[in-house]
View (cartoon, rainbow, N blue to C red):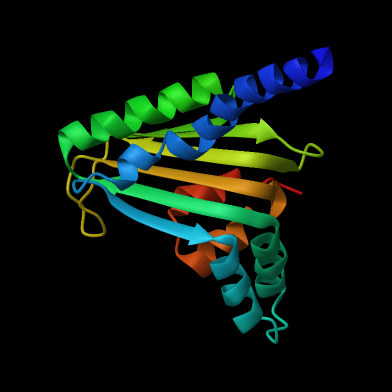
Length: 180
């Protein structure tokens, strides 16, 4: 009986903790002032299989990486209030999930911050969050203020550049690619 009660208590404690990772970004998806792209493991698998015959080294790295990623979410907004909501949501998630700062890039008024959760070794992470802020100046390539990218899976940092190129993700992710 004690074991059953103990199991129920542990379960009730863990459910909200496990749900935080799933629901914290849901409010961003529901905002009509924030553009959202969600790429599931299934879609990554389809893209990888379409490229399977290509013998190019970068394509093969992309296929390996795509198979190891479970989810990618990209949030983009040019609205000031929505951008503030994205920043506060991301910073709260980073803090509660105990993500570590991997790298920060400052360029003029723009800030690019990378946060990761440790993976199976020093080249792998189980989660990556990229937050780009301060892009409120219009450029010929973009008209947005804030970009938030989240990725989960078994992410090999040495191969992240191939994913950026093949999936047309924000180019700042290439800077994570470790030197060999």
